[in-house]
Length: 74
Image (cartoon, rainbow, N blue to C red; front, side, top):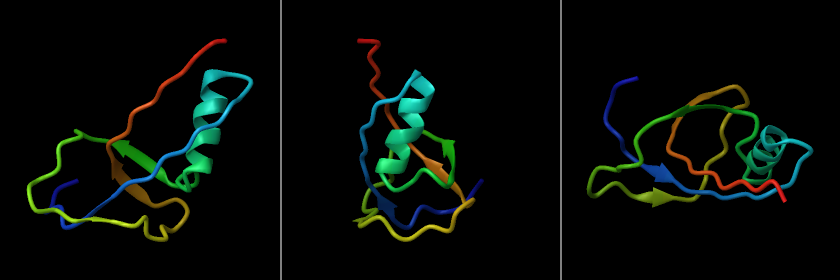
């Protein structure tokens, strides 16, 4: 994927699950991004890029994404 970054959006979710993967998937759903394809990229945004509210994204869309996760086995 190439092109100029013109905007960015941020969201967050948290959830539990029977496995770490289930918990991650449930957190994506809670964040409103569970039905899109995330392509992990660097977390650095170019200067002057506005951060907007999360737009509606078509299910199945391929979206470049910088993400972090925190898990626990307790």
